[in-house]
Amino acid sequence: MAKDKTIYTCTECGGSNPKWLGKCPHCGAWNTLIESAAESSSPVKNRFASLAKPSEVATLADIEATDMARTPTGHEELDRVLGGGIVEGGVVLIGGDPGIGKSTLLLQALDSLQRAGLDTLYVTGEESGAQVALRSRRLGLDGSQVKVLAEIQLEKILATLDATRPAVAVIDSIQTVYSDQLTSAPGSVAQVRECAAHLTRAAKSSGVCIILVGHVTKEGALAGPRVLEHMVDTVLYFEGDTHSSFRLVRAIKNRFGAVNEIGVFAMTEKGLKGVTNPSAIFLSQHSEPVPGSCVLVTLEGTRPMLVEIQALVDSGGPSPRRLSVGLDRDRLAMLLAVLHRHAGIACMDQDVFVNAVGGVRISEPAADLSVMLAITSSLRGKPLPKGFIAFGEVGLAGEVRPAPRGQERLKEAAKLGFSVAVVPKANAPKKPIEGLTIHAVERVEQAIDLVRSLA
Image (cartoon, rainbow, N blue to C red; front, side):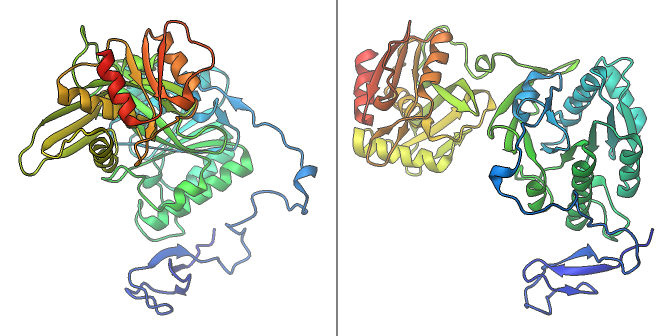
């Protein structure tokens, strides 16, 4: 195989240079030249060959559209975030902190798929085959027939995929794989981008479902170029505290399913097990209602979940602090301003701490009303009524705006035994929900007065 020449391409203007320079000679930008492989002039097969046979231009109405067949992995929570299972020719990128359970979950999923009759391949670049076998025995996967390849050279991995033709292959991890066509070290931007592109082409052309494991940066984002997330079909993030036994897998991108879907797992001695009722994780078990606690019905993808929002308001002196865990800190400052302006509740000389129980991260604005009620409860030192839930977005003018799919949220709360709900007026159901008393409000001051009358 003829080795391609190495060139350096500017990420700003696209200009190329035969050697690396600190400053691009074409556009003058600094530190923008990255290593890439130039096409070989020899008559070898082009590494950028088309993924499919040439086709003619056609209208959308003339193209036959069929649903993508999905194969369940044997883990219901993982299937949920994948959109029902793995897809032939699909490419999945999964990232997370070291030691959080990525390799464990994928090894369990491969074993389930192998036992279901699908050929699987586990390519490890960070462990030896003996280490993977030892981990499988710790997980109770005795007699597993999953094929293992300890290799980091891209060309050998592609040759193995072509020879064995597995249905599913895991590359653990993409940062350890390197190509002979580049001289940079494994894990560099050029190597990660080039290797991911080749593996994506291999998946699309052969129909193999490839799962890439990616490292994350200190900020928690996937390491490597952002183009990596655009190449693949599905991007999953492993979340959770390594000191906790619970893990969340969140879908950030999914061409075959809903985004922001989450799967909840519990880490056990035998690996990761799916949690069928995740609301139980995010609710503290108080024998009696306590001040500063309000239960929120949040929506994660297609799943309504109950999460306890806790607030602690304490005297803070001349420089009060605002700290939130699992919620947006800037939005907390905005809600405190709305609470002061429209409800007359001042926290300007108070420390305000807000926490979402269980380590879950809530990004939707429907948590606004619950946060404000929890803060008010803590400031007054009086608990909210027993069996109380609330949700709704709060605007700067003090209005309470509806949350999407309010009916499903209320039904989930009633199913788990909650009896009192404060919701936006637009989310009030036309028909009563058995066991649940619903109070509809239009403004934040109405919600505060209502809670005072219920307490």
